[in-house]
Image 1 (cartoon, helix red, strand yellow):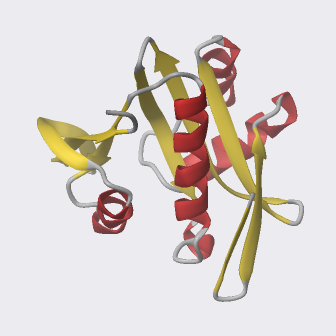
Image 2: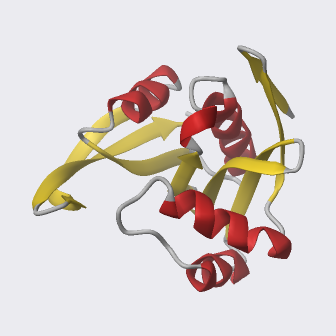
Length: 157
């Protein structure tokens, strides 16, 4: 699968064991409380988990890490490197992650997004996600806290 927009392109492929350092680096560049390489390895070792990574040539530009249990998929974490945002990579990754979830039997997809992450909320709304809950004060922003919105999308009625 490939994303193209504004001169950028990305190939999307399954995450492999050699991608763990890239995942940790990308996550640290986007979140105040980043996951470690070992945390990614533990999640990916579970049979219900899967991940997709986007690359521009050899450079990792983003990834989606998901888990499917019964008929529900949870997008555990989703990252596009700041300099690659608004080039279609996020949309392509999300589409690929949703297709993989459906192939694994998921009927519903859930995720959490920070209330103040307007670009991510727009991406998810454009993909059909709707807010179904709020976790108050879930994310840290220095000394303050920000609510997390729980979003849901139905894949199959």
